[in-house]
Length: 248
Image (cartoon, rainbow, N blue to C red; front, side):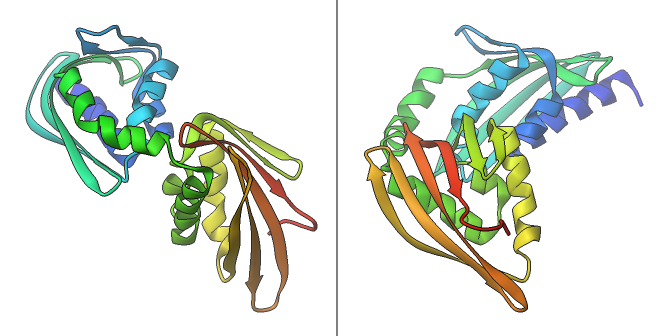
């Protein structure tokens, strides 16, 4: 495989990871010292900073699709003209971008990206919907999360959580978005053959909501519990699961 082929593959893996909305895949596609700059603004330096920047938009999105309009690759560098498309709260938002990607040949991960776009126009187009999402009441955020649980979609389950959120379930504690979605990955298999029913969502305080749940299945002992969600800026920052008995 030629150097250009390896460069193209690494870039396409990053684009696919962004479209998946799975921040763990994004992490795998980025070099630890990755730098991402939306020119002429200051860059996000370091993989963690880049992921947090991307999380601020892709976790709000129900679907992400980055259409490559043209591409050219030479050595470790790729020039990609794109139309970045995001579906947020039922509507599509798109922004044209010209990206210059550089790939580390040793790790075959993207180590630098300069994206040329009209960031002011983009922010203006999404300002209203982002403001609405950030101002959601806890009950609305929890309702959206429970719909994802019902649909058995782990990425959608994690979409309403802050990047540095925590989930405490009995003696288990899952810190950060990646650890939380790792837990959610196990939920569909654990619920197989069982039915989950949620009670009404009750306000605990201005930033907290509580919902009870009941899990049942043929030949299985029922499991009950409740979750208390703390919400800030439209995202779940902490979840405490109350388990009067064993977990499911």
